[in-house]
Each structure stands twice: as C-alpha cells, then as structure tokens.
Length: 130
Image 1 (cartoon, helix red, strand yellow):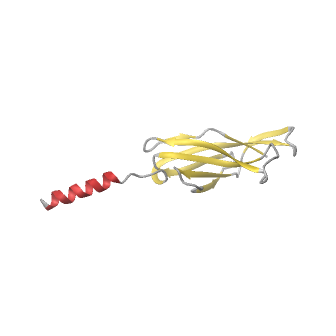
Image 2: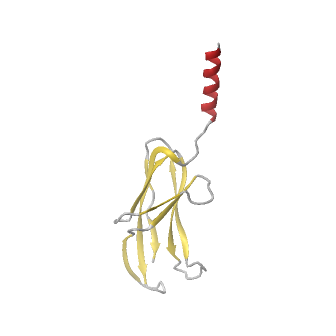
Image 3: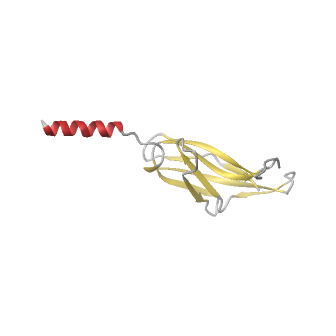
C-alpha cells in the first residue's frame, strides 16, 4: 500500500510540473542574418552580404529580457541549441534607417515556436541595416 501511495504521489508531482520554454531540451532554432549596407543617409544601398559576427539574442517564452546571446558564424548563420518546447523570440539590433530613434538602433525580431522534442526550427532570415 505504501509503495502504491508513493508511486501515485510521484506521478502527480511529475504530471503537474510543466516545463516552460528555455534550456534543457533537445531541440534547436537556427537562422541567418543578412546585412543591407547603406550610405550614411540611408538613401543608397551599397551592398548586401552575410552578417558575420553579429550578436543574436533569444528570449525564452514570456521573459522580459533576453536569455542568451550568441554570435553568427562567418556566413551569418546562428543556432540556439538544447531548447525545450515553447515560444521564443530571436532578435538582432539594426541601425535605424529612419534616423529618428535616439539610440540609433532597433531590434529586428522573429517569433519561433518549437512544438516537439528533437525539432530543428528555421527562423525567417533577419535583415539588418548598417
């Protein structure tokens, strides 16, 4: 009888523990950063190239600030590994092409959802201005 109660309590405990978005899983999100390089007044496009060595941030679920930061590889590709099921926001800072923001930068975001274990999800390309 005691074994049955212990198993029942442990089952209830594990069922009631729902894991939120974040680290600790076996899924991943990857994508690419592409740079549109303009002149200083953003009136002429000078070049388009892969965003090498750009900082990419991820927000787990409903967190208020970023949870992890990585850099893109030489070809603009990034990957966040070991994620659980859930909703994520991936973002990169871009120069403000309107020249109206006090900081001169804004975040270009992509919403990504992992729906199963061992899933690899591609985020839409992130285009930033420089």
